[in-house]
Amino acid sequence: MIHYDLVCDQGHAFDGWFSNSAAYDKQARAGLVACTHCSSTKVEKQIMAPGIPSKSNRKPEATQRMVAGPADPRLAQMMQLMRDYRKHVESNAENVGNKFAEEARKIHYNETEARGIYGNATADDAKALIEEGIEVHPIPILPEDGN
Image (cartoon, rainbow, N blue to C red):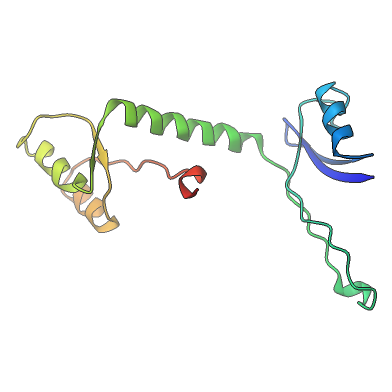
């Protein structure tokens, strides 16, 4: 038997026991796994801590159980909005790389043509641009950027 912590698309957390992981997959695809709170069949497995057996000579109070919190469906929506925002900027603006602060000033002071730009700036550079009245907005760093 295998135990899964599950969450539905409404954020309700519950658990389920299955004969093996293939049985869960088969039942979930068939719509047979339903939320115990709202009966939604849009269910996913939550991230779980591995079940590592303790040594037999350990005292019971020394063992701890880790439990994952319920996944909030709003988080997935927010991540998609950030991805869409980033894609829009990258599709409609020029990447000026590390020269962002320099190019932003040139545009602001009409030393070069006005256009949408994006790139890299230090926190100090961004603060200085804002203090000069130059409008800047950070592009979100996404989880996949770290891969």
